[in-house]
Image (tube, rainbow, N blue to C red; front, side, top):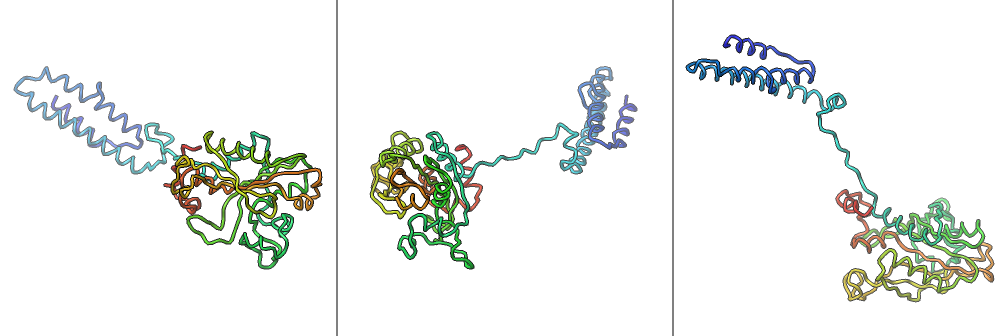
Length: 340
């Protein structure tokens, strides 16, 4: 038996493998339950008592030699493999690809679109590089009018009539020029203003504007539409109020506030202790705007509204710095995986 064990030790020392399958076959041959080493241990009962101690030491040496050989060969193949043989070795762990998530701006944009789509608004989009006509003049911004100073504009240096749009209201004009009432549409998109970047402002941001033109459209229709949006987006307990305001393209104009959903109207830092948070501007479309688009202002009326997506997202998710939306920080973006 001692000679048999020594022969096995020589076989182990001289064994070489070209594949991981050969290594596994070697392990099964020597170390599996029905392998050589367990078989030799089972024969120990036939060894004379005075020789068992020596024979046990030799068997343990054989077992250790076999295990060391298996470990040595496996480590060699692990280094060589580096994933190259993953398709042939099903025992290797998979390389899990971590999935990303939608950007919070995309999440909020889609939610706003879905709310208005359910009540009949269609989505329209337009170019980000616009002419003065679509961005200002057709929207009742006369040349040299102080209202133009409300929006710091990026003009194209070689052609001052071309600019980066400051709002998606330009798409409203394009739609009204091409379509006849009734018109019911929303206009999501990216806009640009020459503003200093801070926690509350950015030179690039996103808007969703809406337009409804038909016969006998009233301010009551506007209020009911926006109340529906507020309760759908912020919750059924949300209260609204309208404050008079000024926009060149609407008359009368208003700003819409909602009851602060953080403090429930009691007053906090988010609502500046007023109990109310501004979310959008709105108003009845100015007759001059309708006429500029060849729509009879004596027959048709309409309302328009617009909101910043970043501001809405900041309110919804209690984000205090608009710059976070543009920094592509994975730690920030991962927080919105559950919001999809």
